[in-house]
View 1 (cartoon, one colour):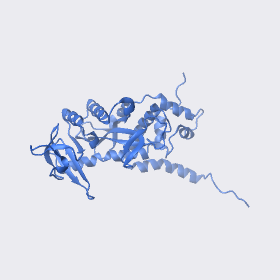
View 2 (cartoon, one colour):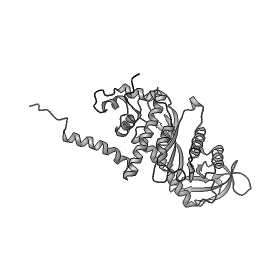
View 3 (cartoon, helix red, strand yellow):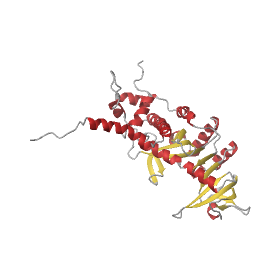
View 4 (cartoon, helix red, strand yellow):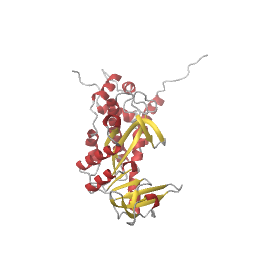
Length: 331
Protein backbone atom coordinates (compact mmCIF):
# COMPACT_ATOMS: atom_id res chain seq x y z
CA UNK A 1 0.00 0.00 0.00
CA UNK A 2 1.41 3.36 -1.01
CA UNK A 3 1.88 5.94 1.73
CA UNK A 4 -0.42 9.01 1.62
CA UNK A 5 0.98 11.91 -0.39
CA UNK A 6 -0.60 14.58 1.85
CA UNK A 7 -0.51 14.90 5.64
CA UNK A 8 -2.83 16.74 7.99
CA UNK A 9 -0.04 19.24 8.73
CA UNK A 10 0.24 20.12 5.03
CA UNK A 11 -3.51 20.72 4.81
CA UNK A 12 -3.39 22.87 7.97
CA UNK A 13 -0.61 24.99 6.46
CA UNK A 14 -2.68 25.38 3.31
CA UNK A 15 -5.66 26.64 5.34
CA UNK A 16 -3.46 29.19 7.10
CA UNK A 17 -1.96 30.45 3.84
CA UNK A 18 -4.82 30.45 1.35
CA UNK A 19 -6.65 33.79 1.20
CA UNK A 20 -10.05 32.38 0.37
CA UNK A 21 -10.46 29.21 -1.72
CA UNK A 22 -10.36 25.98 0.31
CA UNK A 23 -10.53 23.10 -2.12
CA UNK A 24 -8.41 20.14 -3.09
CA UNK A 25 -7.91 21.61 -6.55
CA UNK A 26 -6.56 24.88 -5.13
CA UNK A 27 -4.38 23.04 -2.59
CA UNK A 28 -2.83 21.01 -5.43
CA UNK A 29 -2.23 24.14 -7.51
CA UNK A 30 -0.21 25.84 -4.76
CA UNK A 31 1.65 22.75 -3.58
CA UNK A 32 5.47 23.14 -3.67
CA UNK A 33 7.15 21.92 -6.83
CA UNK A 34 8.52 18.41 -6.32
CA UNK A 35 9.25 15.41 -8.49
CA UNK A 36 5.83 14.00 -7.72
CA UNK A 37 3.50 16.77 -6.45
CA UNK A 38 0.16 15.75 -4.93
CA UNK A 39 -2.94 15.84 -7.11
CA UNK A 40 -6.19 17.32 -5.88
CA UNK A 41 -7.50 13.83 -5.16
CA UNK A 42 -4.80 13.42 -2.50
CA UNK A 43 -6.30 16.25 -0.48
CA UNK A 44 -9.80 14.88 -0.93
CA UNK A 45 -8.65 11.43 0.20
CA UNK A 46 -7.02 13.01 3.26
CA UNK A 47 -10.35 14.46 4.40
CA UNK A 48 -12.05 11.11 3.93
CA UNK A 49 -9.20 9.06 5.40
CA UNK A 50 -8.69 10.78 8.77
CA UNK A 51 -10.73 9.76 11.78
CA UNK A 52 -12.63 12.84 13.02
CA UNK A 53 -11.34 13.38 16.54
CA UNK A 54 -11.54 16.46 18.78
CA UNK A 55 -8.93 14.89 21.09
CA UNK A 56 -6.17 15.81 18.62
CA UNK A 57 -7.01 19.49 19.10
CA UNK A 58 -6.68 19.07 22.86
CA UNK A 59 -3.30 17.36 22.54
CA UNK A 60 -2.01 20.40 20.70
CA UNK A 61 -3.79 22.96 22.90
CA UNK A 62 -2.91 21.54 26.31
CA UNK A 63 0.53 23.22 26.40
CA UNK A 64 -1.08 26.60 25.72
CA UNK A 65 -3.47 26.73 28.70
CA UNK A 66 -3.29 26.97 32.48
CA UNK A 67 -5.65 24.41 33.96
CA UNK A 68 -6.16 26.29 37.23
CA UNK A 69 -6.46 29.78 35.75
CA UNK A 70 -8.54 31.61 33.18
CA UNK A 71 -12.12 30.77 32.28
CA UNK A 72 -13.91 28.37 29.99
CA UNK A 73 -16.43 29.79 27.54
CA UNK A 74 -18.90 27.48 25.81
CA UNK A 75 -20.90 28.73 22.86
CA UNK A 76 -21.92 27.74 19.36
CA UNK A 77 -21.73 29.32 15.94
CA UNK A 78 -23.40 28.50 12.65
CA UNK A 79 -21.04 27.91 9.74
CA UNK A 80 -22.91 29.35 6.76
CA UNK A 81 -23.83 26.93 3.97
CA UNK A 82 -26.54 28.88 2.12
CA UNK A 83 -26.36 26.85 -1.12
CA UNK A 84 -25.48 23.43 0.33
CA UNK A 85 -28.46 21.34 -0.68
CA UNK A 86 -26.44 18.10 -0.82
CA UNK A 87 -23.83 18.57 1.93
CA UNK A 88 -24.11 16.35 5.00
CA UNK A 89 -24.46 17.91 8.48
CA UNK A 90 -26.21 20.97 7.05
CA UNK A 91 -29.47 21.86 8.78
CA UNK A 92 -31.43 24.94 9.75
CA UNK A 93 -29.90 26.82 12.70
CA UNK A 94 -30.25 30.21 14.31
CA UNK A 95 -27.47 32.60 13.26
CA UNK A 96 -26.45 35.50 15.45
CA UNK A 97 -24.70 36.99 12.43
CA UNK A 98 -27.84 37.06 10.30
CA UNK A 99 -30.33 37.28 13.19
CA UNK A 100 -32.35 34.63 11.41
CA UNK A 101 -32.58 30.88 10.88
CA UNK A 102 -30.19 29.86 8.09
CA UNK A 103 -28.72 26.74 6.53
CA UNK A 104 -25.39 25.71 7.97
CA UNK A 105 -23.38 23.47 10.27
CA UNK A 106 -23.56 24.22 13.99
CA UNK A 107 -20.20 24.19 15.78
CA UNK A 108 -20.07 24.13 19.61
CA UNK A 109 -16.72 25.09 21.12
CA UNK A 110 -15.16 25.05 24.56
CA UNK A 111 -12.71 27.96 24.59
CA UNK A 112 -10.11 28.70 27.27
CA UNK A 113 -9.13 32.34 27.76
CA UNK A 114 -7.33 34.51 30.28
CA UNK A 115 -8.59 37.70 28.68
CA UNK A 116 -5.72 37.81 26.18
CA UNK A 117 -5.69 34.44 24.45
CA UNK A 118 -8.24 32.45 22.43
CA UNK A 119 -7.48 28.73 22.86
CA UNK A 120 -10.07 26.21 21.61
CA UNK A 121 -9.68 23.09 23.74
CA UNK A 122 -12.67 21.01 22.64
CA UNK A 123 -15.56 21.09 20.19
CA UNK A 124 -18.59 19.18 18.97
CA UNK A 125 -20.78 19.38 15.87
CA UNK A 126 -24.52 19.57 16.49
CA UNK A 127 -26.20 16.89 14.38
CA UNK A 128 -29.33 15.89 16.29
CA UNK A 129 -30.87 14.16 13.29
CA UNK A 130 -28.04 11.59 13.32
CA UNK A 131 -26.85 11.29 16.93
CA UNK A 132 -30.02 12.43 18.81
CA UNK A 133 -27.91 14.68 21.05
CA UNK A 134 -29.20 18.12 22.06
CA UNK A 135 -26.99 21.17 22.58
CA UNK A 136 -27.34 20.63 26.33
CA UNK A 137 -26.09 17.05 25.88
CA UNK A 138 -23.01 18.41 24.10
CA UNK A 139 -22.54 20.97 26.89
CA UNK A 140 -22.48 18.14 29.41
CA UNK A 141 -19.91 16.24 27.36
CA UNK A 142 -17.68 19.30 27.05
CA UNK A 143 -17.66 20.26 30.74
CA UNK A 144 -17.16 16.66 31.87
CA UNK A 145 -14.24 16.28 29.46
CA UNK A 146 -12.75 19.52 30.79
CA UNK A 147 -12.95 18.24 34.35
CA UNK A 148 -11.35 14.92 33.41
CA UNK A 149 -8.48 16.85 31.80
CA UNK A 150 -7.81 18.67 35.06
CA UNK A 151 -9.42 22.05 34.46
CA UNK A 152 -10.42 24.07 37.52
CA UNK A 153 -11.41 27.35 35.83
CA UNK A 154 -12.10 30.58 37.66
CA UNK A 155 -15.50 30.56 35.97
CA UNK A 156 -17.49 28.85 33.23
CA UNK A 157 -19.40 31.34 31.08
CA UNK A 158 -22.06 30.38 28.57
CA UNK A 159 -25.12 31.68 26.77
CA UNK A 160 -28.67 31.34 28.04
CA UNK A 161 -29.29 28.50 25.55
CA UNK A 162 -27.21 26.29 27.87
CA UNK A 163 -28.66 27.47 31.19
CA UNK A 164 -30.73 24.35 31.81
CA UNK A 165 -31.08 23.12 35.39
CA UNK A 166 -29.15 19.95 34.57
CA UNK A 167 -26.21 21.96 33.25
CA UNK A 168 -26.23 24.35 36.22
CA UNK A 169 -26.40 21.47 38.70
CA UNK A 170 -23.54 19.65 36.96
CA UNK A 171 -21.29 22.68 37.38
CA UNK A 172 -22.46 23.03 40.98
CA UNK A 173 -21.52 19.40 41.65
CA UNK A 174 -18.06 20.12 40.21
CA UNK A 175 -17.68 23.03 42.63
CA UNK A 176 -17.24 25.36 39.66
CA UNK A 177 -18.39 28.96 39.49
CA UNK A 178 -20.61 29.77 36.53
CA UNK A 179 -21.98 32.89 34.87
CA UNK A 180 -24.73 32.98 32.27
CA UNK A 181 -27.67 34.96 30.98
CA UNK A 182 -31.24 33.99 31.85
CA UNK A 183 -34.39 34.45 29.83
CA UNK A 184 -36.74 37.09 31.17
CA UNK A 185 -39.42 34.48 32.00
CA UNK A 186 -37.15 32.28 34.14
CA UNK A 187 -38.75 31.82 37.56
CA UNK A 188 -37.05 32.92 40.79
CA UNK A 189 -38.12 33.50 44.38
CA UNK A 190 -36.63 36.77 45.66
CA UNK A 191 -38.09 36.97 49.17
CA UNK A 192 -39.78 33.64 49.97
CA UNK A 193 -43.13 35.01 48.83
CA UNK A 194 -43.45 32.92 45.69
CA UNK A 195 -42.02 32.42 42.24
CA UNK A 196 -41.83 35.32 39.82
CA UNK A 197 -40.28 35.96 36.42
CA UNK A 198 -36.84 37.54 36.59
CA UNK A 199 -38.19 40.46 34.55
CA UNK A 200 -40.25 41.51 37.57
CA UNK A 201 -37.36 41.49 40.05
CA UNK A 202 -36.16 44.82 41.41
CA UNK A 203 -32.41 44.64 40.92
CA UNK A 204 -29.63 46.41 38.99
CA UNK A 205 -26.06 45.94 37.81
CA UNK A 206 -24.92 45.41 41.40
CA UNK A 207 -27.05 42.27 41.67
CA UNK A 208 -29.28 40.73 44.30
CA UNK A 209 -29.59 37.25 45.77
CA UNK A 210 -32.64 35.21 44.75
CA UNK A 211 -33.60 31.56 44.64
CA UNK A 212 -33.73 30.02 41.18
CA UNK A 213 -36.54 27.50 40.77
CA UNK A 214 -35.19 23.96 41.06
CA UNK A 215 -31.64 25.08 41.78
CA UNK A 216 -30.99 27.25 44.84
CA UNK A 217 -29.46 30.62 45.59
CA UNK A 218 -28.01 32.70 42.78
CA UNK A 219 -27.01 36.32 42.28
CA UNK A 220 -29.14 38.06 39.64
CA UNK A 221 -27.92 41.13 37.72
CA UNK A 222 -30.02 43.45 35.56
CA UNK A 223 -27.98 45.08 32.79
CA UNK A 224 -29.63 47.88 30.82
CA UNK A 225 -27.91 48.83 27.55
CA UNK A 226 -27.79 52.37 26.19
CA UNK A 227 -30.43 51.46 23.60
CA UNK A 228 -32.76 50.20 26.33
CA UNK A 229 -32.20 46.46 25.83
CA UNK A 230 -32.14 44.50 29.08
CA UNK A 231 -30.09 41.42 29.89
CA UNK A 232 -30.43 39.26 32.98
CA UNK A 233 -27.15 37.74 34.13
CA UNK A 234 -26.88 35.14 36.86
CA UNK A 235 -24.16 33.32 38.79
CA UNK A 236 -23.94 30.76 41.58
CA UNK A 237 -21.36 32.99 43.29
CA UNK A 238 -23.77 34.99 45.44
CA UNK A 239 -20.91 37.27 46.54
CA UNK A 240 -19.84 38.14 42.98
CA UNK A 241 -19.27 41.87 42.59
CA UNK A 242 -20.43 44.00 39.70
CA UNK A 243 -16.83 44.40 38.52
CA UNK A 244 -16.11 40.67 38.60
CA UNK A 245 -19.20 40.05 36.48
CA UNK A 246 -18.04 42.70 34.01
CA UNK A 247 -14.58 41.10 33.86
CA UNK A 248 -15.84 37.59 33.21
CA UNK A 249 -18.45 38.82 30.71
CA UNK A 250 -15.65 40.68 28.91
CA UNK A 251 -13.51 37.56 28.83
CA UNK A 252 -16.47 35.62 27.42
CA UNK A 253 -16.63 37.99 24.45
CA UNK A 254 -13.38 36.38 23.29
CA UNK A 255 -15.36 33.47 21.86
CA UNK A 256 -17.11 35.84 19.45
CA UNK A 257 -13.70 37.02 18.27
CA UNK A 258 -12.66 33.37 17.92
CA UNK A 259 -15.72 32.64 15.78
CA UNK A 260 -14.77 35.53 13.51
CA UNK A 261 -11.16 34.33 13.36
CA UNK A 262 -11.89 30.76 12.30
CA UNK A 263 -14.23 31.99 9.58
CA UNK A 264 -12.18 34.87 8.16
CA UNK A 265 -8.67 33.47 8.48
CA UNK A 266 -8.90 29.66 8.58
CA UNK A 267 -11.65 28.85 6.06
CA UNK A 268 -13.72 26.78 8.46
CA UNK A 269 -16.90 27.44 6.41
CA UNK A 270 -15.37 26.92 2.96
CA UNK A 271 -14.81 23.19 2.54
CA UNK A 272 -15.95 22.09 -0.92
CA UNK A 273 -16.82 18.54 0.12
CA UNK A 274 -20.14 16.80 0.69
CA UNK A 275 -19.57 13.83 2.99
CA UNK A 276 -20.04 14.29 6.73
CA UNK A 277 -16.68 12.68 7.47
CA UNK A 278 -14.86 15.08 5.15
CA UNK A 279 -16.71 18.09 6.59
CA UNK A 280 -15.88 17.00 10.16
CA UNK A 281 -12.21 16.59 9.27
CA UNK A 282 -12.02 19.94 7.49
CA UNK A 283 -13.56 21.72 10.49
CA UNK A 284 -11.22 19.96 12.91
CA UNK A 285 -8.19 20.84 10.78
CA UNK A 286 -9.38 24.46 10.50
CA UNK A 287 -9.52 24.71 14.31
CA UNK A 288 -5.99 23.31 14.54
CA UNK A 289 -4.94 25.88 11.94
CA UNK A 290 -6.47 28.63 14.07
CA UNK A 291 -4.57 27.36 17.12
CA UNK A 292 -1.28 27.77 15.26
CA UNK A 293 -2.28 31.22 14.02
CA UNK A 294 -3.34 32.31 17.52
CA UNK A 295 -0.12 31.08 19.16
CA UNK A 296 2.03 32.83 16.54
CA UNK A 297 0.14 36.11 16.92
CA UNK A 298 0.30 35.98 20.72
CA UNK A 299 4.07 35.45 20.68
CA UNK A 300 4.64 38.22 18.12
CA UNK A 301 2.08 40.64 19.49
CA UNK A 302 0.31 41.03 16.14
CA UNK A 303 -3.25 40.58 14.90
CA UNK A 304 -4.59 37.62 12.95
CA UNK A 305 -5.15 40.00 10.03
CA UNK A 306 -1.51 41.07 10.01
CA UNK A 307 -0.25 37.47 10.26
CA UNK A 308 -2.48 36.32 7.40
CA UNK A 309 -1.63 39.22 5.14
CA UNK A 310 2.09 38.89 5.80
CA UNK A 311 1.89 35.68 3.74
CA UNK A 312 -0.05 37.33 0.94
CA UNK A 313 2.18 40.41 1.03
CA UNK A 314 5.24 38.34 0.05
CA UNK A 315 3.37 36.97 -2.95
CA UNK A 316 2.43 40.51 -4.01
CA UNK A 317 6.07 41.63 -3.68
CA UNK A 318 7.23 38.77 -5.89
CA UNK A 319 4.62 39.60 -8.49
CA UNK A 320 5.53 43.30 -8.55
CA UNK A 321 9.17 42.36 -9.05
CA UNK A 322 8.20 40.14 -12.02
CA UNK A 323 4.75 41.13 -13.39
CA UNK A 324 3.10 38.49 -15.53
CA UNK A 325 0.36 40.50 -17.19
CA UNK A 326 0.74 43.46 -19.54
CA UNK A 327 -0.94 45.03 -22.53
CA UNK A 328 0.29 43.93 -25.93
CA UNK A 329 0.71 46.50 -28.62
CA UNK A 330 -1.97 46.57 -31.31
CA UNK A 331 -0.16 49.11 -33.52
